[in-house]
Image (cartoon, rainbow, N blue to C red; front, side):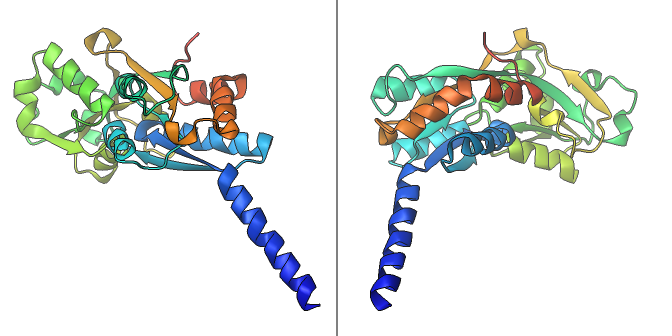
Length: 252
């Protein structure tokens, strides 16, 4: 009986080790956290492989990868960091591709902006705060700054800015009332859990660099078949439907 119990315990340990070896750890830009989790769930249902999602600003995720973080894949909010990873050898050459194209919106749930053009108030915000993501580490923050500079509004809004560490924290500032207005991802604005918007103004795509979001296989997972399977799944129709439903454009 003892030997039988020992054998069963060994099977459990081996099974858990095998499961851990096959599971994926995917670094995901904060703006894409919800669709990434939904896609991961669909992938798990289809393959039986576990996926662990870690989110953060693209800049911080890149820094973690450069410092040896054991991620298998990066789903960035830009193309610049995946290109850097590929060129440096930290990313596997030939695996980089665009999985989604994002959009930026000016958004508020503040009652004072009901039935108003909130774009028109940007030159004179008074006591109001404008939330954007950190332009140095978050691509959506960089796009927000580009838009404000292109409209010659940067100097006017700078005293009113509050910076989110990433685009998810930027939305938290709006939800908590710490900012009256914010430049966030369109994909966030379609979340049904948010209060109804009093202002929703799409930022023209021509006012900032294209928010081309790219994925890449990292050297940590070179030769890992499940990682390649996930990237293939990300390009496929199931994932593309999820991406579109969250307010992104899907590359042709």
